[in-house]
Structures are given as structure tokens and as C-alpha cells.
Amino acid sequence: MVEGQQQSTSPLLVKKFGGTSVGSIERIEVIAEQVAKSFHQGERQVLVLSAMAGHTNHLFGLANQIERVPDARELDMLVSTGEQISVALMAMALQKRGLKARSLTGDQVQIHTNNQFGRASIERVDTDYLQMLLQQGIIPVVAGFQGRNTQGEVTTLGRGGSDTTAVAIAAALSAQECQIFTDVAGIYTTDPNIEPSAQKLAAISFDEMFEMARLGAKVLHPDSVSYAERFKVRLRVLSSFEKGSGTLVQFTSAKQPLEKVVGIAGVAEQAMISLPDLESGSESYQKIFQLLAAHGVEADLVSKTLSDKETICFTLNDSELDLALATLDSISQVVKLGAVHSHRKLAKLSLVGDGVFAKSDILAKVFETLTLIQTDAKMITTSDIKLSLVIDQSALHTAVRALHHAFELNKA
Image 1: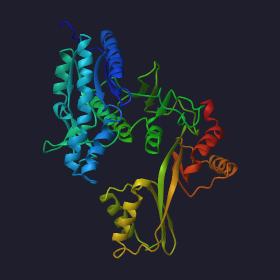
Image 2: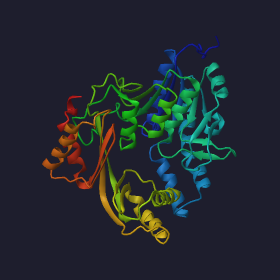
Image 3: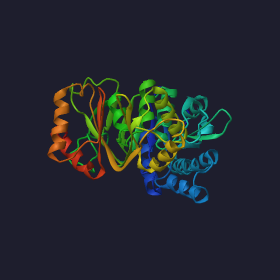
Image 4: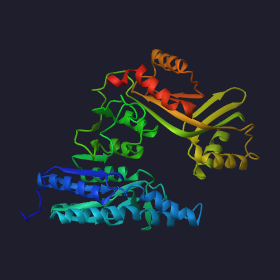
């Protein structure tokens, strides 16, 4: 065997490092040392890196100084450069330690996406080049967040897209595990910055993790979770700052107690639009949300009641409210919207647990807890796996802490 090569039977791990993990030269050196140690212990590794912390925001800021809504193609060309910096620096740090490493863009790896600039979806990953590098004992260091479309243009996957890059590569290579390294030790019952008694979960089901991610827990991107479940990728969240086994996202929740709230996610800076006099009929409903989506407004929680007229409420990011109202105004002559009410300074609070919310005692405890802290829910949506509430933003932290203790998640 050539020096520096590893047996193809050695375990293959795809490791993704987020922006804070590679946020400085000092942090890159620390990660390089960890990767080198794992290499000498026999691991085969593919690394996926985000841009250094703050760099992508800086690039977006530069673009916005020229144009408030920049051309989508040019914006992708610009913001994709952040990851190229981090992967090149990491490859240098590994080479300094005597390892063979090669930095790669999404195009060089052949990460194929659809044609949606700014929010592309991965369609396939070619593995020939990656396999060749691994067989030669070379550690591929791949730029996350980016790929190429059918015309060979650079595309990006949206914020948090490096998680999905890592999962897609792990699926294509049939890796033993995809490890997401971040600045926290794993998945917690809630944000430890809000509730210090939050407990790290040893494992969580894919369904529960997807809901936690979609509803405000920022450790994993929702797309990466659904992609991992679809392609049966073993997924683990770990800290790049401390040792530990992290949290395993598993294919069954058998190890979790049945009918138990697993976690609480909260997100601030929300707004809500209410249409209490909407003309009845699904066609109106369809036109509204199609047009909002076409203008880049993402409606989240949606509630609808039926009578002679329909009442629709939906939430969205506060930053998108003005655009959403302008969009609705533009179709008011075509669709009989009636009155349009908007509300700002709201928060979305969600409890997650598989099979929990069919139980009336769970719902009763939620409302009892909110009453005790004198907080009203302005909107409620439920499913088998989640209960989401819209409340005043000022009450978010108090509500998270109260519900966390009410459901004894500090003893998880």
C-alpha cells in the first residue's frame, strides 16, 4: 500500500463543519488536527465545509450595496466563493500535517442541482472523482452550499445548505455515517441559551428532528434531515469544540418513551396575516399562495376555518411582511380578499413529540401553562407530531421555560 493510502474497507465518514467551526485560522488548525488524528486511526474521511462565520453575510451585504434585489445568477456566483476560501485553507492545514488533501468546488465534485438559483435542490452527486481521491489516500475537502445546474451554472442551496451537501455526498458514497459538527454538543430538548436545564438527547427520530429543524431549532437544516431519511443516511450531530457522542438521528423512535414531548422549538421575528372575509373556494386559496411563493414569500403555519366565507391565517418571517402585503394588494382586484389584517412582533412556539398531540391531557397542560404565565395563543395548529402556537414575541422565552418545566424535559 502506498504511504498515506488507506484500505477501502476502512470506515468512511462524511464530516461537515459549520461556519463557527472554521471561523478563524486558529479554528481551522484545530479541526485539521482532529482530522489528522482520525486519519491516522484508520478513518477515511470526506470533509464538507461552510464559509467562515460571517463571511456569507458579508457577501450578501456587498451585493445589497449595489442592488436591493440582485440578479439571482450573479448572487449565487458571488456568495458561493465563501466556501472556496474555507476549503482551500483547510486543505493547506491538512497538507501542513503531512496529509494529502484537495479542496473542491461543487462543480468539481459534480454535485448536480435543478435550475433554481438561490434555493437549488440536489438531484444527484457523481462519485467517480471522489472515489478516485479516496483510493489514493487523498482527503477531499468539499465546498458545501453549492452545486451546478443543467447548464453548468453555479447554484447555491439556500442558507444551511452545507448540511444537505454533506448528506447527499454521504448517500452517494454509502458512507458509514454523516457527522454534522457545530458549536453545540448535539440536539437539546430546547435552546440551552433560553433554558439552562435543557438536556442533550442521545437520539431522536427523523420525524421529530425534521419538525424541530423546520420549526426553529437551527442545528440542522430541514432539507438535510429529509434527504438523510429518504436515502437511509445515518446522521449524527456533534460539537467541534468538545468531545462527546452527540445526538444520533435514528430511523425509529423506539428508544424514545411513547407519547412524550421530546423538544420545544421557538423562533422570533414572526408576523401573521389574517384574511377573515376571503371569498370561499379553493381557487382563491391557491392563487394567494402561488403568488406569494412566486414573490419569494414563504407562508409557514396556515389555519383555515370554513363558514359562508373562509378565514385564513398564516405566519411568515417579519422581514417578508411588507412584500406579502404588497403582493396581496396586487391581486385584490382579481381575488375578493376582503379585509387584510397583519400583526408584527410575534413568535412561533412548537412542541414536538411523535404521537403526542392526539391526547387531550397534553393539550390541556399546554393551555394551563400558558394561562399561568398570562400568555394567549393567537393561532394554533396541530398534527400527530407537533403543536405550534403563535404568541407575542415578548413572551417567547418565558413560555419556552414554563412549558419545558411543565413537561419535565429537564429530566429527559
